[in-house]
Amino acid sequence: MPPASQPRKPARARKLRVPSRSKPIHALWPLLFCVALDPFLVRAASILALEGPKPFTLLFPWVEFVHLPIFHFTGETMSTISQWVLYLQFPVYGLLMTLRSRADRRWRALNIGLAVHFGGILLVEILSYFRP
Image (cartoon, rainbow, N blue to C red; front, side, top):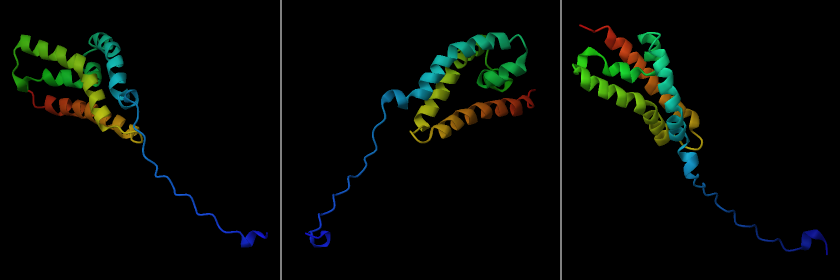
């Protein structure tokens, strides 16, 4: 039988590609990374504190933000808040990046964390000019 005379087979129905749910460990990678990095950065903070306020501000701008005199915190309150901020700054960055990340948007999530960090540095520098 010649090939032209054979009946044509119906085309297969195309399967719709359903995006797979990523595993929870892949979705939480920014948070886990920042939590794992935090003890090393706290140790680096104790070394950077010996260098002066500017290197410390580059690593932990939100701690310096708490120390600004515009808040009028007492010494004990400022010390307590500073310790909390010191240990929670990078896990909060990781949480923000985790909430913003998607499988194809990892660089956007990293940029969110960097923007919050450098925004804190900029805010501390601007507000330091308004000290009484």
